[in-house]
Length: 339
Image (cartoon, rainbow, N blue to C red; front, side):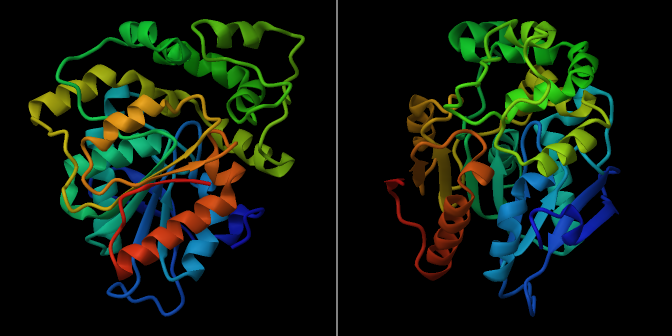
């Protein structure tokens, strides 16, 4: 398993019982025994791929874990329906449960980053019995809302989410695809870079696309080879990835119809990893999430931004495996750690 070579991982493509086809990496530890070796299912965010976990898959497998990493719906080699309603978290979670069924795994440690973090948190609500533990990166747990808040109102309260108003519009799929090189440079930017460009306020991203003084190849946390892989994979279509941002009302309606609770399972071990330089992380939201999680633990990684699996690859790899080993041996302590 070479992080610089996507083909060095064990790839599978399977039809799930939900009717969707998923591509995923399925890496087994030596002498795999489902009774002894825990399964980790790693869920990527936007605009990422299974490849976002490339630095963790090998080390976690070598430490005795089965590591399963899908391309989520709309990405890479996985089905790409055009309709936004196919991307609600209820349906995504049904896919993940079906993937575990296909693998013959009843309970897994679910790990998510960014949109994958949000999805992992919802998986813990829709399928609570399927988790051994829950690990969320960069996006803290938020409970279902009792009242629907339109995105326009959300952005008024959190102006740094203004880009989501653009993502919500169908025209953004083709426009981002036509400026994909610049877009990848903007979203994978390294925090603190002198050339960092802020695309988060409302309307900023469209202006940056039209600014010819900004090069298509911006400095990022990716190598040239990694950047090429993302461009190749994301270049298939941006409709699916952006559809995640077009489901807010649909998700709310599904959760209301199911009377989905706010509290995570009381005995569910929980770990949250976040970078102190990540502008998407609001400490007040972390504090709020603590109220709904009985076995809460968080680790703040100093000076790191949003793309923790790359920017802080050693810390993420080590923190997760140490947490798992403590969990298997003694249970998870409740505390906050800063690295």
